[in-house]
Length: 167
Image (cartoon, rainbow, N blue to C red; front, side, top):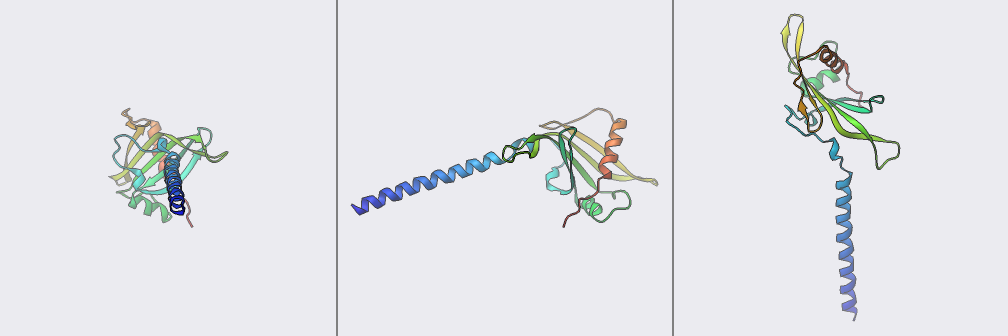
């Protein structure tokens, strides 16, 4: 009788263990924010670069992260006095915000609004040249509109961000 009871207890324990494990995996998958992921045909994956700084625009309900390749990150973190050096590449990823389902009052990234890329190239004696590209939406598609005055403002804004101070 004791052997049968032990088998039932062991079987019950295994059922509970497997049920709780699968519940935890499903719960973890539900926490991952798929809306904020990159999608589309981008020239680079900025998530593989280093974070230079982050910010929030409360009026527009957006948040952004400025990423840089190794050259740009080194320049940004060493107290830059001049322009980014040739070979620097920057990406500004901007997300719409959404209420966090897990933390009252918090806001998290929602769908991607835009991804902007700047590549610093050799220029004239006056300084480097900047190649700018912008991708809108999710999945992201390149905005093929001819460059405008607003694009120069965007380039200036991106280049003006300084590295966040990290302990």
